[in-house]
Image (cartoon, rainbow, N blue to C red; front, side):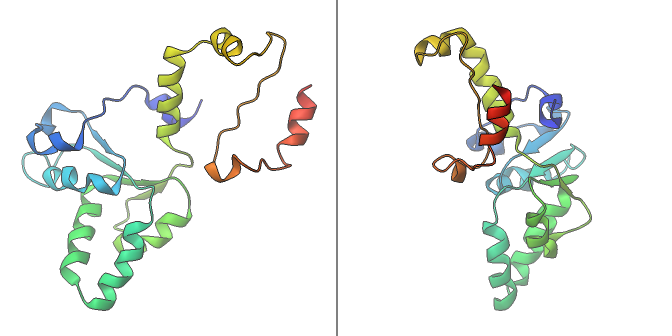
Length: 172
């Protein structure tokens, strides 16, 4: 069982509601994108400063812009983003390359958990509405057919690596 499966059920709030939310009603907040900066700004205000915040960063967009901000001398933007990253109790990255890209914002709260909770949440949602037998029938597979689900980068979907072939053959 992955760490994201252990965390379990999570309520998802739309970005439009961030300014109207009483954050003190929650035991904690998980932000899953840089786009959630607006919510984090409101969590930086009293009385919400003590609400635990986990901020998951999957994209390198801001990291690329940070270099421009520094070269242009836009310290106010650097300060703004550094304060936002500092507000998070933990900033979680899905791989080890992203924390290096964001190192100028590191306040000692960076953490890497490989994978993504979105994959787990999507799988849980899908499994609640679909059954194995229903899917086998829908796609024309017999009950004795072996089905293998390959989960990973979308770059692999068109050209499945030969690394998958040997383990699949061993399963037969």
